[in-house]
Length: 240
Image (cartoon, rainbow, N blue to C red; front, side, top):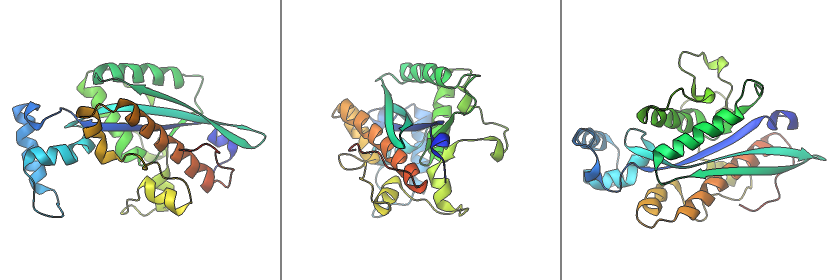
């Protein structure tokens, strides 16, 4: 799938998100009204919850009603054929400051002399990058970092690597979670201590900031392991 040289140009990325506010009632009246409509149209396995409960359970995946909690980036290097990983995690309780730090990091990584670098993540195209771009716009942080400047570009001009894309083999209808792929490939699950649905509660109620950061890092390491697996290369020896 990819050579070691290809992979050394990848910047692996994952972000964690939470509802934008600790309580539904803290949203603006306009956002409350629109969330109520959105929640009413959602599928619920049992009885439909009230808007406040739905907000706590589902809002974190919608950039209009959520915020970024942390972001981890990482890269792989090969020595005698064996990969080693380097990770950097950015966390801040203030989302605007978090995005300023992310903006600075992206501007450092994606310079005019580093044209071979490509972002890599799981469901990167449909979640992480759109979410990042929208939150940058909410806070008026312009210009957008180079990897987010995709408006008006044709699909073949966007060189990000999405592990979900190559698992789909052209099937645009399916969604396969990172945890499913790790299980299929015999990779340790990154969801052992937390899952994405629990991040909001861990952030707003329990203040488990270190746990959230470790969870984000585990997702990046799992994505690295998947890329190594599908490329027929040795896996990382670290534990998630």
